[in-house]
Picture 1 (cartoon, rainbow, N blue to C red):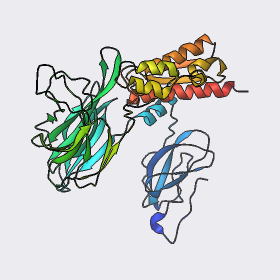
Picture 2: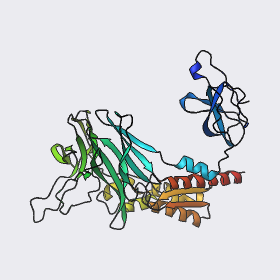
Picture 3: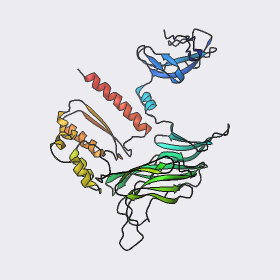
Picture 4: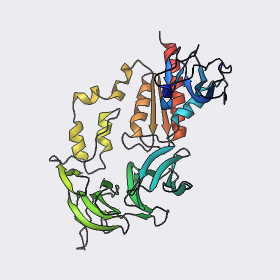
Length: 409
C-alpha cells in the first residue's frame, strides 16, 4: 500500500518504493525520506508535488505523506496532521510571499516585491554577483491606505514602482488613485514623478499618475509613460494646461524630467502600442468618445445613477439604456425568483462594483424571505488583497457550501 514503481530507464525520476503512509518507518534502509507536502486525500488518487515527485494518497482525511528519494534512512517528520478548516483556509488564503520579481538590465540586481502581513509589501534587492550578498529591504508599504502595485527596473540602478489606493471623492464617490515612484537601488532618493499640470484648478480629478508603455527606450533610466491629462481653468491666466485625454511622454526617471512629448494628449485617444524599443507604432482612437468602464451590478437603474457625478454620465446612461431589460436583467429586482441560498462578499473600497449594489441585493433577498448573506470587508477593494479577509472568505464559503449541500434533497 502506498508504494510506487521504480523507473529503471530513468533513475533520476525514481520515487522510492519504500514509503508507507500508515505512520510507520520506511521498510527499506536504502532510501532517504523527506517530508513532502500536505495534500487532501482523494480515495486512492495520485497527487503530484514539485520537482516531479509523485505521492499516492489514500484514506479520507488530510494527512502528511513522505516523499522518498535514494539514500540512507533519515525520517525527518512523520505525524498525522489533520488540518482544521481554519488552518486550511489560512494556508490557501495567504497572499503570495513573492508577488513580483524584476531583473536589472545588466543582470546584476534582482528586485522582488514580497507580501508582508495581511496587506503590506516589501521591496527587496539582491546582488546576484555576490554569493554572500544580503537581501536589503528598500521600502515597505503598510497596505492601507497606500498599496504597492509593482516595481521594475527603469535603469541599472533605478527602480520605478507604482503605488495606488482608494480615495473618497467629495465624501461620496470612491475611486482609484495611483502615482509612479522612482527610487535608487540602495533605497535612497525616493521621488514621485510629477503628474502633468501646473497645480492650478483642474477641470477634473488627476487620479492616475501614469503607466509605463515601454521600458526599453535605449537610454538607461528612461521610459515611455502613458499619462492622463486634465485641462485646467483658463480664467485669469495664460499658463494653464489645456491638454485633455491620454498622451505619451518620454520620462527620465533619474532626473524626473520630461524629455519630450511623444504623443500629444487628445480626448479621442484610447490606447497606444510601442515597438518595445521606444517608438510608438499604433494609436488607437475611440470615435464614440466612450471613456470610463462599465461594471455590472444588481440593479441596472441604480448603476446608471452611480455615474451621475462623472463627466461621462450621459455616455454610461445611454450605454445601459432603458426599457424592459432593466427589470429583467437586474438580480435585485428578481430576488423573489431566486431559489438557491446566496452568499456575497464585498469590499467597501470596491470601485469596480459599488458595495451598495450588494447591500441592495441583501435587502431585497431579506424582504423576499430568501436565504441571503452579505459579508462586507472594510477598506478593501475589488480584489480583496488581504490574507485575513481571504482566510475568512474561504472559511465562510466552506461552511456555506456544507450547509447548503446537507440541506439539498
